[in-house]
Amino acid sequence: MPGSPQVDSLPSDTEIRLIRKDSSLMRVQAVLLRHLYLMRASWPRIFELMYWPSIQIVIWGFFTQFLLTNSSYVAQAAGVLVSAVLLWDVLFRAQLGFSLSFLEELWSRNIGNLAVSPLRPVEFLGSLMIMSAIRTLIGILPATFIAILFYEVSIYELGLPLVLFFSNLMIMGWSIGLMVCALILRVGLGAESMAWLTIFLIAPVSAIYYPVDILPGWLQSIAWCLPTAPVFEGMRAILFDQGFNLELYLHSLGLNAIYLAIAMGLFIWSYHVARKRGLLLQIGE
Image (cartoon, one colour):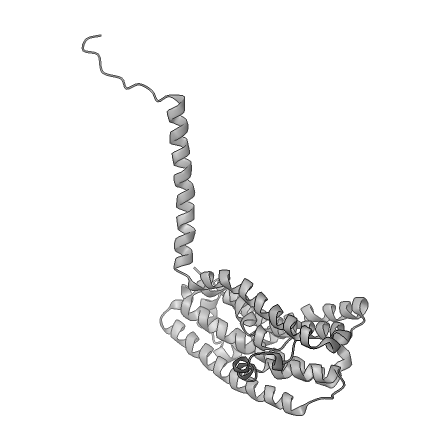
């Protein structure tokens, strides 16, 4: 009719489907970009993606190379490997137990409350170490009995050296945990994945499943700079009836003292800086 307002035609069913499809793709793109930006802003997340495949191929590549040149090792491989796994788990649980106890304070946003309390950093660290030891014992003891039941391998046959190995690995785990916690205090919770990654970074050069001699020369030098390699070399020496090597134990103990002192210094420094700048109240956000 003349003078009546113009009414735009309604979109067809095909146009509606196209609009919905475009909107769906835009929503998918929005979520995808969100995670890409998050990954780009946090280098530990990118590092984690490359980390696990690389570390697995290095460890088992060296172990395969060792077996190819030492056929006599296979006869006692079961007992040595099970013992190595159990001792390695002591180190892993000690580090993870320390780091998780600290992270739980961050996740619950309780770290700020601890910072304004009379609790001193050294006392805080002491409690985390004790909690780490408790977590480790709870995790390891059942596994040792499973090894006896199913594989007839008893790590307790190591005798007194087992206590020495255990304590050395615990101290090394605490040192790594302290460094991880210091990093989280400086970088934030974006680096919390390092609590699971860092310990495996030293696994290839810790001589867990193979002797240090199988490593390339430059990696052997690095291995002997870590407290872990002397522990696992000492374990194999006992299992192959070579006796307890006091020199290896003292080597590991001395390195542990150095690393623990450095790690405690880094943590206390990071804690004081974060406290001074008010970062402890923001880390849990």
